[in-house]
Length: 439
Image 1 (tube, rainbow, N blue to C red):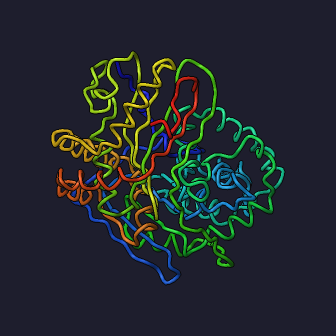
Image 2: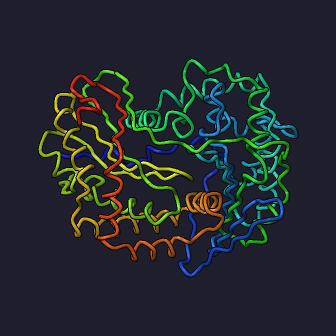
């Protein structure tokens, strides 16, 4: 029997400082994405969908993969520090100004990027942009503010789900460094990241050439003005070596009644046709029951069999130079051996029926088009595409690309992926979880 343990994202971490509730966006399918690259190499994109709420996302190549090995966790602190006192305003003033105009700001991130997203009504946009500019461009990371932020970091770590821990360990085992750097600061490092380290990291990663600005609900001209108004440092540029896929294994014994295991093979870089095919394959593998309390008839559920309550889902994550394609599952500790082996066999078999692939295509299109109704997700997607490829597609265009993928394309990509070494990350009660070389 399967449960819906994967209803929330597990590959991504969000730190939210919300000050108001915004109205939902009204998405127009006929809206076109406008893009440009400014002379300072900042990418800008705009999708004017007629929404009464404008969302502005400022993204930087400042994710955890760019962390120096001596300063691991600094990207997590950077996300968490959004909204603290800046050169021009205290954290209290920032919160009060946003509250007065009914705006909200979120800071989120993944292994590649850090996103700052503003949501506000059209008539308060100019005032809200001044706050966003101050929050992004003029961070100071004062030592006493970082000390006051320690409880927030501890809460972030304490609230991690075991599935997220398993996926984080999977990345570390698969890539070691770079993409293997954790999204989260180690508990031993909390409170030890200095103000100087934060200033240096911000100066080398929050630069114009590593920046993308995406606006949903306004014009490209507005996006260009936002980008030009940012006072970003251009003194240096963080370097990152290409992440090599090694195919390793990491385990964290945490006790309990469940074992949480993430299995993966080497995937494809973001923006490639292979990556889109693997995204279809991940949906085709299964993502839990599609009706409440309903049966799970996905390929994963059939492969694992009737072993008691469990949750299993396929996933695909793509980065600028690499990716992971695999399965995450949570099973009773006594059933972990057979369930993990069954999942790994399915993963390496590279065999998915045409009907399952067609269902995966439909599910992926629904997900992409549904996320387009959330301006925050859409803005982050446009910014990420710009930083990955230098251009951006609308959700409708991506859906059309999915329609062009055939079952043969998916099977061909799966055949190539199955030749790579399997990686594993595991957390929970691991007494009966097999090791990667036993799969």
